[in-house]
Amino acid sequence: MENNDFDIFELFKILVKQKVKLFAFFLLFFALLFAYQFTLPAKYSVNFIASSTVLQQNEILLKVTQIKNLLDNNAKEKLANVLDISLVQAESIDFVEVVPVKNSAELVDIKMATSDIELPTVFEKKLKDFIAKDSELWTRRELKKEQLEYALGKLNQELDSLKVVQQVSGVYIAAQEQNLIDLIDKKIKIETDITFFNLFNVYKGYEIIKHKTSLLMQVISSALFAFALAIVLILAMHFYQVLKNKIEA
Image (cartoon, rainbow, N blue to C red; front, side):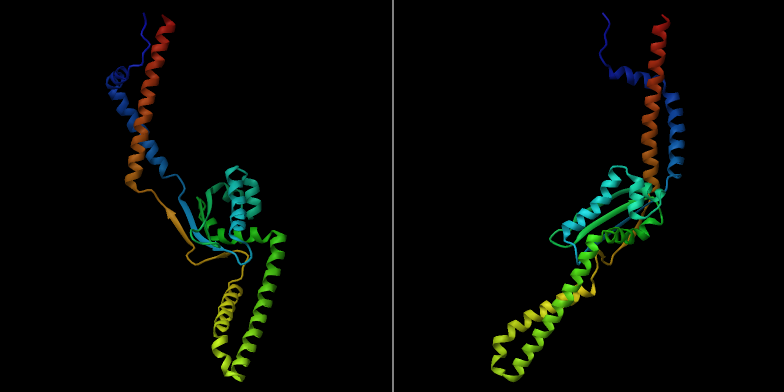
């Protein structure tokens, strides 16, 4: 009765018997894989924090996720069109990630990796332009700016009125002190919003990082993959010979 049980020791014996070929194939594959790694393009990534004076955090997440979905669905031509980049640049993007910043109701963390050396330098602007293309959001931008300017004008009037009351009737200073502080805090916040007003604002710290695998890791990864390929090839050759002998018999 023929025994068809898998025997790992038999496979080990085959490899030992073919050790010269195994070593030769290993050296061949190692040389090819090691050389191949130097032909691979360098990888670049950007990681930055962004917010909006107009959009809420979830709305920013939604807009950037639209870009991510195009990439995940391999819609490279559409991705190139919406970001106004070349098809080659769109195909060079490895991933786009966007997540809310912890303990913040406004900030989002955006990451992008690519093999194109130029794209990281303009990615921030391309995202801004993509969001600004939405006519509805642009209308909201203009309305929001008018609201901020109007609110600042009203606060200035209240502050001027409060100062007049304090000058005329000093007895009200203590009673109005907290109101004065609240109004000043509101004014500072609105002035800050106007100063940094933008549909999509990227904070300082926008940095382009070039990723390069160390020589040691290149050697180790090439050696491991080459050894695995050599084993597979030796076993494939052996089983082909066995099958051929059975057919001829």
